[in-house]
Length: 219
Image (tube, rainbow, N blue to C red; front, side, top):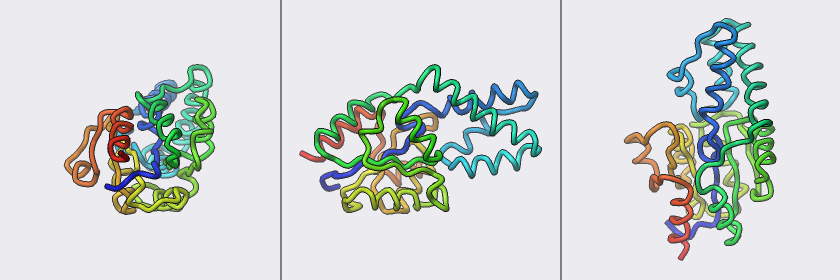
C-alpha cells in the first residue's frame, strides 16, 4: 500500500458496540409480544441495510408481528441510547484524533439509515470529526454491493490506492473488495473467515492497532 490519505469507517460493530444492542432491543420486544427472536437469526443479517433487514423480518414473521418488531424494536433502541449513550470501540477516539492531526479525510459509510448514523455521532459528540456521512438509505443496493463504498470514495478526494476502509462484517469486506478499495477487518462478533482473510489488507484486533498501522504506513 501507498500513503493513506482517506479512511472510510463502517459504523455498527466498528465504531460503536451496537450489534448486541440491536439484538437485545429486538429480543426484549419479541419476548414482550410472545415471539421468538434468536441470535442465530439476527447474526445472519449483520452488515446488511435496515431496509434489507426489515424485508427479512417480514418474510419470517406475520405482517403484524413484523410491524411490532420493527417499530417497537427501533423505539427500544433509541430509548436505550438516550439514557445510556453508546459504547465506543477501543481506540476510536485515539484513531480519530490521529487522523485529524494528520489531515487525513474521514468518511462514515454505514448500512444504517443516515438519520440514525447522524444521531449516534451527535450523541457521542463525534460529528465534527467526519468530512462526510453516507447512510444505507442513500444507495439503491446494500452491502455487499460496492455502491456505498464507491459513493463514499467520491467524498474522499483521494485515489483508491490511498484510501482504506475499516470493516467488521463479511458483507462490508465484500463491498469494499468489489469497489477495489483496500480494506482492513477489525472483527467484532463474527470471527474472520478464509474469505475475509483473502480479501483484506490485514486483520487487526482493535482501532488502536489500526492507528499504529496507518502511522507506520505513512512514515
